[in-house]
Amino acid sequence: MAAISAVLAVQPAASATVSSTPMPSASFDGTVVATARSGSVIYVAGAFTHVTDSTGTHTRRNLAAVSAVTGRVLPWSPSTNSTVYALTVSKGRVYAGGSFTRVNGVPVARLVQLYASTGRLVRSFRPRVDYRVRALVLSPSTLYAGGRFTKVNGHRREHLAAFSRASGRLTGWAPRADKSVRVLRRRGPQVFVGGAFNSINGVARTRNVAVVGAGTGAVYRGFRSPVRYLVTDIRLTRTRVFIAKAGPGGAVVATGNRGGVAWGRSFDGDVDALSILDGVLYAGGHFAHRCRTNRVSSTNGNCLDAGQVPAGRLAALSLTGTFGTWSPSADSTVGVLTLASVPSLHRLAAGGAFQTFHGSQRQPGFALFRSR
Image (cartoon, rainbow, N blue to C red; front, side, top):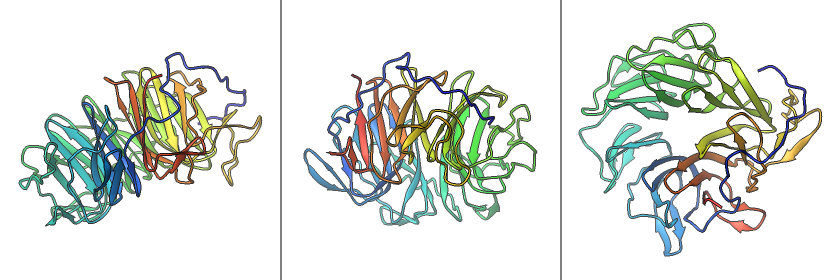
C-alpha cells in the first residue's frame, strides 16, 4: 500500500453510527474470538467457561448464544474441551471450528455441525481435521474451511478444504496455501482467502489475500494482492473488498475487484475485525490510536507525521475511507477480535478480551451497541 502523506480528514460518517456506549448485555469470563448472526441471535465462540447477564451467571464452555434484542444469554449451550475459533450459521445449523477434540463429551476432530435450536451435535457430519480450523464460510451446498491443518479425512489439504453440507463428505476442492489461513468470505462463485500465506497454488501476487474459484479452487488471476502482512478479516460489497491487516501498525485497505487500492487507513496496532452496518465500516483490533496519515514506524508501528487520534480498539469509517468520530474506548492490549452486525435491529456486536469501555463501564468480553 502506497504511503499517503496528506493529513486524513476526520468528519462524521455520512451514515449514522451506533451509540458509543454499549447497552447492558451478557459478559464473558474469557476471550470471545468469533461471532455469527442468525436473525436476532448472535452465536458466540472463544475460550470461556461462564457468561453473566441480568438473570445470573451461566455455565457456557467456549460456545454460547446471546439475544441481540435483550442482550441476555440464551439456553443454547453446547460445550467443547478447547478453544473455538470460527463460526458460521445457516438453515438451522451452526458450524464450529477450532482446536477442540470433544463436543458435548463426544470425540470429534476440530470441526462440527450443531443444531442451532438445541446445540446437539449433528452426528452424520464427522470430518477429521488434523489441526486448528480458523475460518469457515458457506455456499448453498458447501462448507469451506481454512486454518493451520494439512490433512483432512486422511487426505492432503494444505490449509484449505471443503465439505458437503448435506453429508459432511470431503469434496475435491483443494487449493494450496503455503501457510495458515485466517479468514474466508464468499461472493457468488468466488472465495476470498486471507491469512499469513506467501502464495496459493504457487501463483504470484497471491500473498496474504487471494481469490479462488468456489467450484474449482483455481486462483482468479485478475485479483492481485495489495498487502504484505497478515490479513485478519475481509468484508465485501458488490464493488469493494475491505481488508483488515496486521503489520507494523495495522490498517484497513479498500480495493476494487481486481485488487487495486482505492484507499487505506492506518492504526498503531493490528486491525483484527471488520463489519458493515447501515453504510458504516466498523473496525476492531488492538490499536489504541488511528493515524493522521498512513505512515507508521517500521519498528513499533507507531503513527508518524502529524501524529495520532485516540481510538481505543474500535473505529468507524465511511465506505469511502473517511474516519468518523465514534469512539467507545475499549481497554486491553488484545482488544477486539470479532464484529457482527444485526441489520434488522441496527445493532453491532463486538467480542474480544476487553473489560471496560470509557474507562469505567464494565462489559467483559462482549458488547452490543444499539442505534442512537
